[in-house]
Image (cartoon, rainbow, N blue to C red):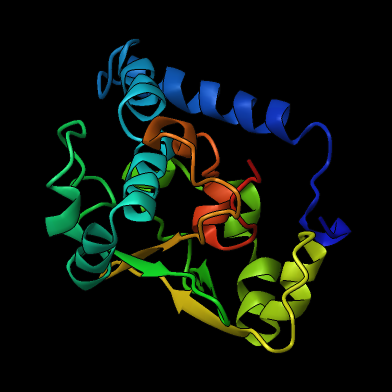
Length: 205
């Protein structure tokens, strides 16, 4: 990844200290309890996250009909799967899927702030919110993708989808070659958050 998307080594410690101070203040004022933050974090670690997105993408790989329904009406298609309650809440109210295909590669960004489909990707990474990434990905997506290690051929069209409060996009990556014998569960392991954002492709088998 390019240097402009790297951060100082103490960023996590610095951010953590600010969070702890804010949490202590909110607890002192009685706005939250000492378990509130842990409850929210557990929710996005165990119920809402990229494991849901991996299940959705893997199903799209093995079921073309589901893939068509997913692109046409994402919430309705997702409702077909046995996923945890809450897929339509907390940044999931207006999720839309867009599928990569031969000759077409999709990239999601949010030029406004950091709108993001939390139920299928969890919380956004630092670089997704970085003003440099947001502006450059809109202007020169090929160059930015190359800096992420993904060289998109000139013959492939790059489509950039701008998430907002009205629509939160995610990408159905192309199924890797040589995966015909894999089970749906095995295919899920090939789907990464980066692939669902469009800054990478799915893992090779």
